[in-house]
Length: 624
Image (cartoon, rainbow, N blue to C red; front, side, top):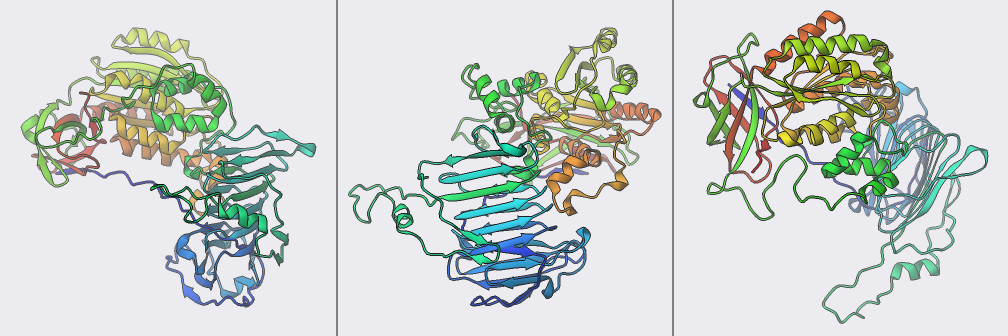
């Protein structure tokens, strides 16, 4: 029987291009003068979306306006679209008919429909184009090397992903306090009259202070594409053709990008992947968990904290000694040193082995296993028996969402202590908006039981921060040992600095098994929550429907680590889950083998037991 570890997918590449386009959703489709159009079938399954694709000829950068009241809008400036524009219209419900999208001059107008039949627009334009987009609740994305992008929304999220080397920007919130996240530090928020807030400034040394030329006179009026003499001078740069005698190519002056983003109550993201947005965007002092993560030197987790609280992060980072060159969770080989058959790298993986009925298969040793890496068998150097003790972290949610159940939490924790093997070393950590270390690792069950009375309950929920703390601080000294995390929570994170995808990444490097035991808070019935993937603004839906998301995230935590997810609905289910967690731990063999791969690995583990099932954790390097 085989188990398999699938390598992580690479992150989406950033698109850079330019063009100016205006799209209006909610009007009729008229012929576009001097722009050839042809309808093409859209290669999207009917169960997912109904729509079509249009190709619009363009001789260069465009200048367009887009108005969409209840659908998503994505404008992508790409060098692949220098001589044409591609307009895609899709819907999660009813098919998109040709009359639903009307193009008139430089305006694209899409008919407004009910939310479940809304029309979403994706427009690919030439580099250095200009766009103006008006929306209400839908998410708006502008990406690539645009010359100018003006976006106006009510509650819709605005996501801009543009070159930062030469950028002039202005962000305005008209009816709420700012909610934003940026890949670079921005100036302080300025509060104006009538409860309006602004952030404005420039990025990059190529941005010159000059008056903005008028780009859009009105919604139905397209600006003149002619450039002024001052623009031509700026675009020409400071180095004349052929003037440089050096062998080095002179650095060309970058063309500036201008962003004018305006919303009443929406979120603004600047060069931040929407999936990497944490639950709370407000800049705030670093918690003890956050400070420990910064001290750990884990780059991706530190970067997540920096984006939320750049000033607090910078002030704290200045107090720390120079960072260690060793990675936070795993020890890698020096640059240039490759893992070979002569100098193999020792890797470690947990393999949980069960029979056809899901029961643990005990008594297996090294000769019972075979490890295959990228199809080639590798030498196994050691197998730790499933009966060997674990280092267990019991992570308890004592935030406000479960505060009234604190006695239940204490009893549940004590029940867990009496269930696990007396040889297992246990650490107890509680969390709300910050972590509280109740006890370090010990086998003294009586001490652990008494320490549970020290728990302080109430406050917000920073589940992801607490998990990151355990991975980078509590378990860091135990690299190479058998470790597991048992999480008792409702899964409703609303305060963490760290976004969920960053936790999955850190988890894949730790080798720890995770067993989430989620007791739903029941604040939002699952049946009343739409799936974020089909809503008009996925990011805003995440903030409004935390509970429905918790189950999916709990399952991902378990799957990514090789653990098991448990959804607890009544007290008797909890004890059954404890019993099963203990049984699962006793199925886990820790295999160390010699790897010849230098990067991504595809692992299979074979056991010589008929009908056996194998579940694998991520493969991690052993400490040197």
